[in-house]
View 1 (cartoon, helix red, strand yellow):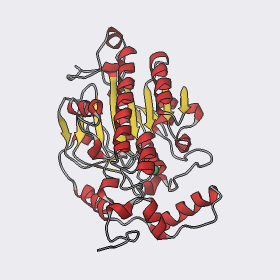
View 2: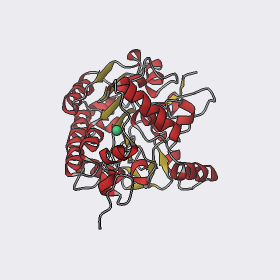
View 3: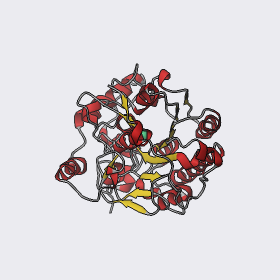
View 4: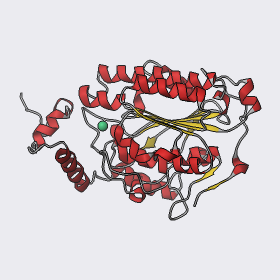
Length: 359
Ligand SMILES: [Zn+2]
């Protein structure tokens, strides 16, 4: 099931003009390819600017950035992180609910495959539901903490002491703040800036550990948001960032082909010399360097049409909402109008269900 292609392990190439990463003597003597996969929960693609997230923007400028990357529908956290770490679309991994689930995901994740091949995995998540995606035996460090600052400190310590080949880090804040104060609110943008600074600390930790020059950094997200919600199949919810930076990535590249969250696992596996095989023997995500392919093959057009135009499955919304309400012990089902108001959409979308129309 799980194999490794040692021949595609790459020696770190000359590092592009990098902001924080420096090649060191340690990396020269131990040229292992490493990966840090970072997910900003709820980060809209249009938030990544020099003013709001200078570290990430600089990383993108000195690496490769997708002109457009879409998440999976339903556009929620666990569903998309499952795609991110399995390389499978939602119809194949089958993780449809967005809540704490018992046990672990059935499909092999990038963590399982890495561990099975003797690589050292560090898993750092800001929400307990993501624990479903990483079996304890697949990570030498597995930390789940709601406080991003504490989580980043734990990751920095592990990066410097645990000789990790694969680091997964999940920032919960953009999503948490979006639900509380609204996407693109001053509070949300402030949270994005604070997470950007913490992300910079992780990059610095790689440099301190002497592995900055060997590490491919993949940055993406699970969904964006509008108002106080992300349960809608609309562009500001579906579009997420997809950024690559590290050895072998020339500065200033643009991934012209529309990318997907499922590419993250394929790119990471390829860089680590791993082969991830599922029941059909293929991933849905494109590996490196196929992510740089400039063309738009017919298959992508079809998936784009589905991804862009497909309506949010009403059945999923009903099932997931019912489960969450039941699990929280709520007996009162709020009417649609009230939900719309709570999501803050009445202020943003005049004339929609929650809006009181006044002259
Ligand atoms: Zn959310």
